[in-house]
Image (cartoon, rainbow, N blue to C red; front, top):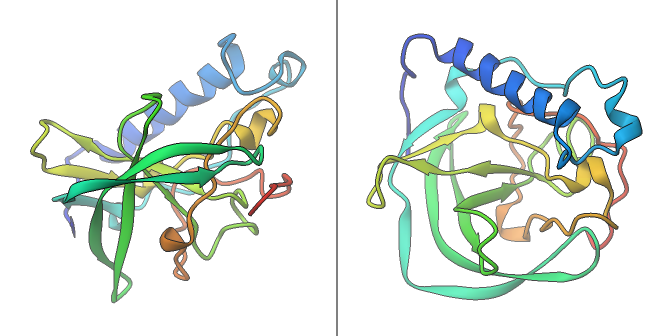
Length: 190
């Protein structure tokens, strides 16, 4: 994957998408926030949009996805498939992250990761980025400006079983992009 200049209006689009996420948290009955937390909710905490955190390219698919067990914040396991990886350069470093799909069908391709902000500025179990493609063959967009905390960061491990980032997706580099906050939450098994 390579860092490419996003289209004109990119930062405004990020702000709009973040506003939609904040609205969902504040008003939707399915919000990870408990009803009493929604009342005074003023929005999530985000890093400023950074064009250097937007990448486009290929997802390197494995011939046969490997099925594995991901430990969750509740201590239970969720079955997932390691479907491929993305390779990219950031701050002069060559990086590689594994891409997964949950076997229960509860989502598309996702990339859990931890970085130099984890547990200090961001959630201890890691954040997620969804890979987006216009077709099954790609190319894929990987935008760390859209990195988000899993629901368990807000709703508690007893309500959500969010996969903890596997060791293979733990980076030492800082990814100061996307959603921050909730670093104080306790995480089991991490």
